[in-house]
Length: 211
Image (cartoon, rainbow, N blue to C red; front, top):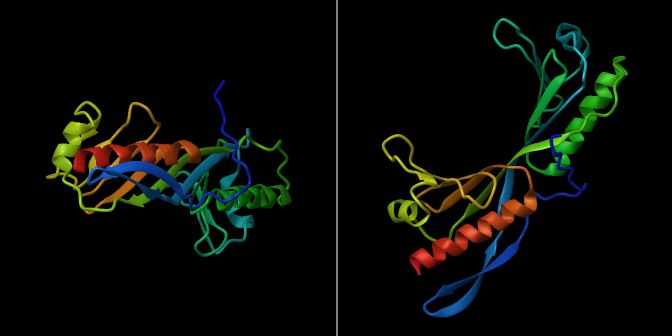
């Protein structure tokens, strides 16, 4: 049975933690404060849906349904709100939230709207499927030695095709995208605490490499 991580109802858009590093032979503390820039989740209503009927009945600032172009129904209830993509099978995805609270609220809004249209279903298990975090390292990075230090079996770096280094840590879920200007993205995680721990570990490794 697939394990579902259920978040507490509090915002984790910005979290500040500390890690120990060494610079000029003395210990120091640096903040690790990754920003959650995209939260993605989804669920399953466990029934087939008439997407054309939903398209005609749902009121939203943006709603699109063109099955010849794409099989899903696309909804944004408000300008700038998360996007909801619904499929005939009853499965749906929500993307573009900038906090877990916003993701959960978008899910509750969607369920409330379709219930008002007469659909009956048990509350689906809502999964946090992907959290994307962004953080900036305190200096520019030479990506070639980083690829070697982190392990060539764990990294991909082909600057002719993509300017960033991809790093899949064997100890954490998700993929880091590391850029020369110091910007670092983590994508593919579904747990805020482990995401922050992954950043802490990576920053400590970078400190050891560039101290």
